[in-house]
Length: 231
Image (cartoon, rainbow, N blue to C red; front, side):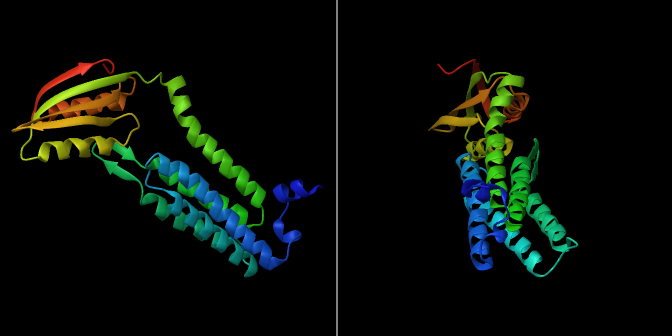
């Protein structure tokens, strides 16, 4: 077994002093979480770099402690999974228009598993699994475009009664609640008692069309016009 293969496939405790093995394993676990967290943070998700780095690091440390305490029946590992379940549930939100945060919760769960893998000594496997998580998160958009259909840009122009500024806040909150890439307010203007906004959405996604109906139901809306694409 050459040096590179040894790093990737073996238990680091087998060929490194315990103190140094634990030190490097904790660093690898935190690094794996940070790398995946950067991808989540770039997409403005609630699980960012610090959260996933701490989840992976914590799971790694608990696993190391489990090994040193001679916990062979898996009680500590089972408690890690239970604790991560509560943490993941905290990022799932049930809004008026559906459930959001499931991918973030699943990412936390996966990073805990990676942290436990690294804590068991298999840092190479942990790094490989982190790459797999990144690929899965990155391929979601590609798979959606292939199987749901290409995202066709639509533009919605709305004119509404400001209601003392409350309407624009409600409109922005409604869009945020859908928490879907491609939906955004591109620009808005205010003049007197009325405001206008330009909203970008995807005509191929059903929940985007649900958003349009919710906007149309707002009593403050006065004029709504739709263009199939950005002029």
